[in-house]
Amino acid sequence: MEIKTFTVADLKTALLSQDFWLTKTLPITKHRAISYSHNPRADKDDLVLLVAYRDNQVIGYLGILPDKIFVNNAVYKFGWLTGWWVDPCFATAGVGAILLFKALNAYHQYLGVSGGSKEARKALDASQKFFAFKTLQGLDIRFRFNLTRAISRKLPTMKIFRVLFKIFDAMLDEIVNLRSFFWKRRNTICQRLTFEYISSIDEETGHFIQRHHQHDLTRKGKAELSWMMIYPWILSVPLKDSASRRYFFSSRSDRFLYLGVKVFEQNNGMVGFFMLKVRDDRMSVVYSYFESQHASSVTAAVVYHALAMDMSALSLYDERLVASFAELRCPYWSTKAVSRGFFLSKAFADIALTDYRLHGGDGDLVFY
Amino acid sequence: MAMHEKITQILFSVIDELNQLRPPEEHLQKDLETPLTGDFGRLDSAGLINLIVVTEQQTAEELGIPILLTDDRTMSQVNQVFRTLGTLADYIHLLLKEKHDG
Image (cartoon, rainbow over all chains, first blue to last red; front, top):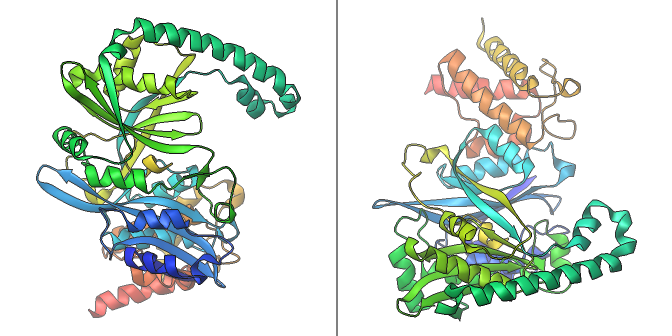
């Protein structure tokens, strides 16, 4: 077994190489490698990918996303673990342990984890090197009933009646559309708001974010949010290509996009900015910036967009958006409390971090 | 008690701790020939990580000497060091000897 490590500079070289992309299993996709190499928080010598090879084939890999934590006047460079995979045929070869400890050593024991699979969590717990430092309590709002999908998942044999379910869904959708129509007419907030859309962060938004991110743990700004929007890890494409078949993590979706929405009130100017992630029929607010007194306007704007874009579901992880949603009285089928856990290595244990804010897109969550 | 014997006892105690977390059919034998990693290995990623961490802790507690099994030197020879309980005992012995010799 051979472990190869790739810095940002190495990855740029790998992008130009042919051999790197010939393995049966890919340790990264090209568009994800391009994203890694443009990360504004990464230096060229930062380790971003570890790959385990056996007989020139990939048997495991671990990605690291360099980031920074801001606490008072101190800045801590660290990395988020991302895309940790071990070939099940080599489960007892020690690959997972080597990848994890090498990553910890490369980042002087300063790492973070957002989400993660059950297996990854088990391994991280076993290491006793991480602690849960924050859990974001969010809300999943279901706007569309989508009986067809629910039945297909839970009772696959009922698929033969799919046409009937689709008709039923279409009828229910019309009810939702009607209720949405009346909600939009009734809701004066939406009538007072105007929007401006951006596909990367402009100067005005950059300054607005800077005024509102002082209590954010990772203080994302113009450069970081633009990078996320311009270099996605998931491409919006109709079919699986050769790379997505050879890569274990998500790399494509029928529909995937980021949208920056600037919110203006008639008499107050710009009152909010939120970055939306749309994947198929699901929308998430991954970053949001606004004063608390404008929470209801911004929440209304988010819901307005979810309905206008015909989303089945909307996920909110900003506690002010979650709280304001209850007062909106907008049409929906159901809501479900959801949570997102964030973990940091114990090297951070002595630093007071709990008062700082995390966003729903922090870690690597913005990319999936 | 000779150092190697002490290390073996520590590793058997580590195995007892690990076995508490494993179903009975997956219990590890307290035998220096017990395979840990490799083709006949009994530990998956989480199992090996657990073994490493508990071994570091128990060695420090029992012998009063901290050893590091997660450094790049150890990680570059995982399949040799963690092939069996015996190879792990030999490696710990080597680390302790290096510490003693300065």
